[in-house]
Image (cartoon, rainbow, N blue to C red):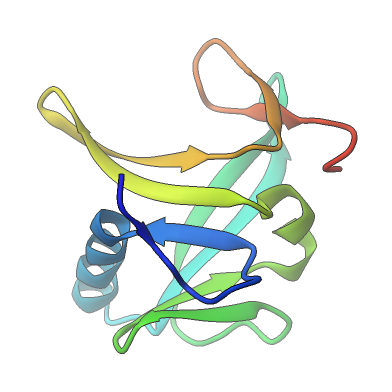
Length: 121
């Protein structure tokens, strides 16, 4: 896995493959960027939510991944997202976004949700 170094101190890292995936989604959707947040959900606690954003949400943190790729992080989600690496991988014939989260300490059986360690939360 090759990690795109965004900027030192940024809460999230994104691989080149994920940057290209985001670029395609932004272009196809005519969006300003991708918004990443977590929400309480599922049997374990949290789930990741990615949306196309037409403009930068007012309170979000903006990370420029490339000249044409912006990632907006929900400010309230940053404690759960800190240290996450976003990757876009091939698993058999499928391509999936993966969130490698050092704060996650358990996942539900279906993979939809996760819990975080008390230190991270």
